[in-house]
Length: 64
Image (cartoon, rainbow, N blue to C red; front, side, top):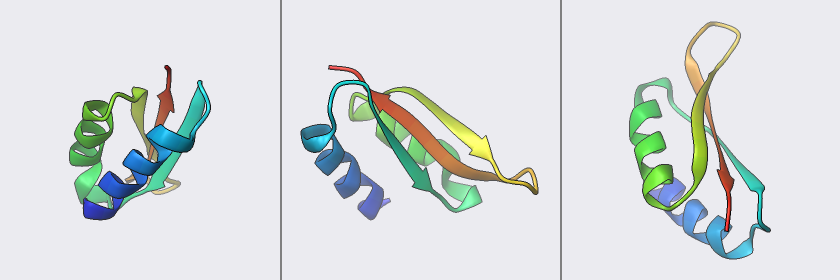
């Protein structure tokens, strides 16, 4: 999750208000990635399933 942590920090500084963040993730790390993003202050964090029903995308929004 090291890279997601660094990207989330970068996004907090550089995204505009209501900006959205999307990560493609490994299906086994969905909940951990959600926890990380929420701990960084992003809201509306959710898992999105791929065509095969596997957790593949995490999306979140930055509200200042």
